[in-house]
Amino acid sequence: DTEVTQTPKHLVMGMTNKKSLKCEQHMGHRAMYWYKQKAKKPPELMFVYSYEKLSINESVPSRFSPECPNSSLLNLHLHALQPEDSALYLCASRRVGTDRNTGELFFGEGSRLTVL
Amino acid sequence: GENVEQHPSTLSVQEGDSAVIKCTYSDSASNYFPWYKQELGKRPQLIIDIRSNVGEKKDQRIAVTLNKTAKHFSLHITETQPEDSAVYFCAASGSGTYKYIFGTGTRLKVLA
Image (cartoon, rainbow over all chains, first blue to last red; front, side, top):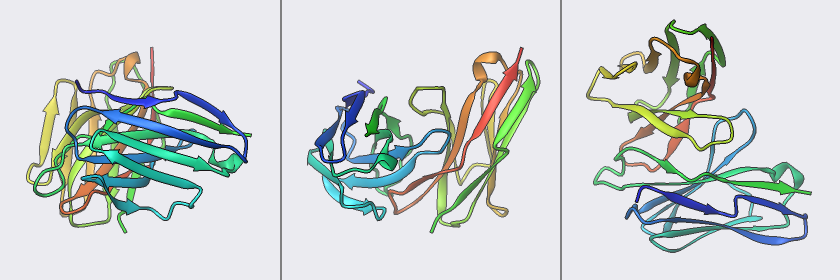
């Protein structure tokens, strides 16, 4: 199984809503990532979890709240978002080696978020 | 922090011609350099990668070269085909970090 599965594929929410994006992988990868991608732009790193602990937070606003309940799951909780937060949110995972750098990021298909 | 510059931002080639995309990185600790292809509405997918202990790597029509001294690496696609049309991203990552920084992307159009 080399799949990273993200749900939902599409999400429309108002600025006062609370919603969550979910990501799941069963490849035994112990590093999991959230990226935000706007149209015609590269993926922009938001958070990295390694061994279920938050390793990197790229100064993301607190209206985005990540969670890693176990080694297979990664959530992104959304609250009080702004229209400019509309984007494709990509989850990715990769194997962790002794130098923390062992290659390929496997991406999910993404969750396309629209904030009204 | 790490920064990856990518050029050109758009590239149009005739079918059968070669395409070259170049990236420059800033962090000398970077030691892993992948290239991703992202088709419209799809996820980025790895097409080739290279580590800092290797100067060149080839896989059929695609190749990547690395110049550590100059801190740049390039993607070469030969005999381009219409299905090569996509956005290509380079990236860089370093030992001892989970950071994985993408270049700004190149939109490649292969004209039939």
